[in-house]
Image (cartoon, rainbow, N blue to C red):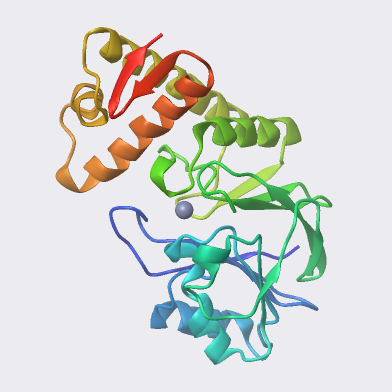
Length: 263
Ligand SMILES: [Zn+2]
């Protein structure tokens, strides 16, 4: 399968250098992720398509840097179809006629096909797309080379689900992994093992903070992320909450009103 990376031209504190989208040319010219509708993204896509017309857009999840560009793509390529796993209250913010995907679906794209893998955790609707013929995985926001992935606990994120999704992809042993942010993943097994170890250490730090009497989410953020830039504090709070929910589900922590304690 031919794959052309097309930059989203939307750099920022949460998107790094900006999103990657991937054009799969062929019988069904398809784009993985819609980015944000930047005019430079549309122009680059136009150029990469040549004389072809965009036929399908497959979106990994409803976060705006992946989905909001659907509106601009639909205006430019009026015959294109838009696919994602439903998250109705978010999807309706992007006014295109979404076609629902489900776990295990096979979607024809380019000159091949992709299997839909539901991989929740970063978002409840998050999917990866897997080219079984070549072993290429489009992993969306599941993995980022050289960084960690935010699990926004107040906005549908679940660390328990995220770790299960990581285990599933590790088991899959994809030959090639193309993320929505940053460079191609060079060693997916090593990166997942690193993520799992990092999350385990974070669990321990949070339990230790609870035992030392830091009982609110804000107090734990202060202890666990002592020198954090102000614009990243919201994400850190979400991450701490995601760990607390996981520890609660495992019976290692419990909540009373806004106060947490280790069990
Ligand atoms: Zn995301």
